[in-house]
Length: 110
Image (cartoon, rainbow, N blue to C red; front, top):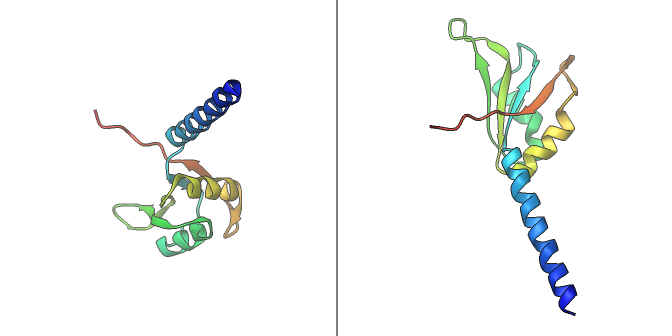
C-alpha cells in the first residue's frame, strides 16, 4: 500500500515536471516563414485559427514600401494550441508555397 502511494506521488511529480519543461521549451508564439508576399494579416490569422484562439497574427513589413517580407508571427492563447498548429502547419503548402513554422525565439530582458 505504501509503495503504491509513493509510486502515484512519483507519477504526479513526473507529469508536472514534464508539463513545466514542455512549456519552457515551447512558447505560444510561432514564427512562420516563406509566406507569399501577397499574404495579408487577416489571411495569416484565418490560416491558423482552426488550431485554437489566435490572439495576434502579424506580418513583418518593409519599412519603406510597407509590403510584407514573406514572414510573420502568430500568437496563440495557450501553448497547447500553438503546439497543435506547429505540428499541423510546418511543411505545408499554402498559396503554392512551402511554409515553415518554428517556435518564435524570445529574447529575455537583462
